[in-house]
Image (cartoon, rainbow, N blue to C red; front, side, top):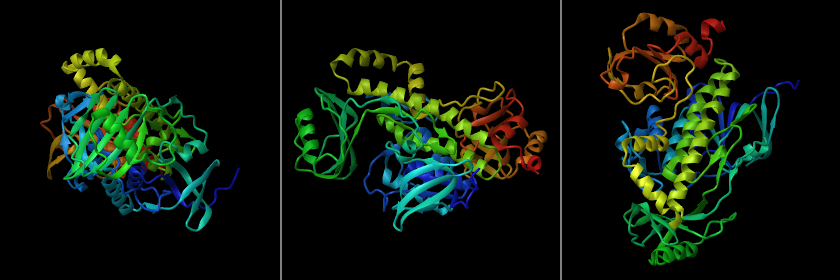
Length: 494
C-alpha cells in the first residue's frame, strides 16, 4: 500500500463557479480544510446567469447569504416551456430571483467561502488526476509551473467539459444538441421586452431589460446546425438571426457580451468514483430552462458539503458519501427530463402547437400547476426516508416562524451555522437528552410554532441542507437518525 504523503488540503474543489464556491463554503462550515482551484486568473466579468430558482433562494437564505445580494427581485410569475405559470400556487412558491447576475452571485459566494477560510488559487489548471488508496494526486499548471497537490477527496465542479470527470473516466451519456442559441447583452438597441420569450415563425426570441439602456436577448433560430465553437459568435451573427426572426434591426446596438449554448442534455453515470465526486455542470448539462442549471449545482454542493466535511474530519464514515449519488443523481435525471420537455414546448415548430394547447389547458388545473411548479422550483425533492412515516420525512423544511425563550426566530435562521438542528416543539426533555451526544454537530432549539405545516409535529431533526431527517410522531427512532446522518456521536467515538 502506498504511504499517505502530507496532504495539501483535506478537500480540493476544482472550479470557482457558484457550485464550487458553495461547496467550499459548506466544507469550511463543517470544519474541513479546503483549496479551490480555478484556471482563470480573474473572476468572470460577464453577466452570465441571471438569478436562481426558489429552492436555491431558500438554500442561500439558510446560510444568511440572500441578504448579501444588492436587490434580489423575487417574482411568482414564470413559465413552463414558455407557457405562463404562477408559481404562487405553492406555499412560499415563486419563480426565483430574477435580476442577480452571475458575477454578483460568484462575488457573494467568494467572500463567504474565503471569509470562512477556503484557499482560492487562481490561474491553476488541472492537468491530471490520480487516485490512490488513501489520497488523490492532482497535477496542476500554475503561475510557478507544474506541480502536484494532494488531498483526501477531490470535488469536480469544473463545468460541462469537466477535466476531473474525464480524468477518472466517468461516462457522460445523454442527448446531443439539436439546436444552437445565441445569448447577448446589447446596449443602445431599445429592444421590446419579451421576458417569457416569444415563439415566432422560424424560432424563439427572448428579451429582458438589465439596465436603463441594456437588454439581455436570447435567439433560437430553427434549422441551424449546432457545432463546437472555440470562440463566441459575432454580433453580426446575433443581429442577423434577430432580424430574420423579428424583422427588427439591432445592428446599431453595442454587444457587451455574447455567448452561445445548446439543448444538449447529459448526466454523469456516477456522481462518485472512490475519492472523486462531481457536482453542478460537471455532473449534468441541459437546456437552462427556468434558471435550473446554476440552482441545481448549488443544491448539489449543499447536499455534498456537510457530508464530505463530516467524513474528512472523522465524525462520520465514508459510507455517508454513498448517499450523495443516491440522493442527487435522481434529481439530476428529473431536471434533464423537465428541461427536455420544456425545450420541445418552447423551441419546436408548428407541430408542437397541439401539445402546447393541451399543456395550457392542463396547467390551469391547480394540481397540475403545483406539480410543475414543484418540479422546477425543486420544492418537491424528497430524499428517501430512512424510517417512519411522518409526512415531512425527506422533504425540505419550509421557512417557518418560531417562538423560543430568546424570542422569535425561523427554521431558516437556525440553519445559518451549517449544523444539524433538532427542533423540540413540545418541550420534551427526553428528546433533548437524546441529542446531547451529538452537541458539536446538532443544535437543539425548543420552540413553538403556529405554522400549520408543523401542526401535530412534536419534534423535527433537520440536516444541514435543510431536509428533514426525522420527525415525531411516527418518524422512527431519533437515535438511529442521528447515527445515520451525524455519525456515532462523540461518546461512541471515544
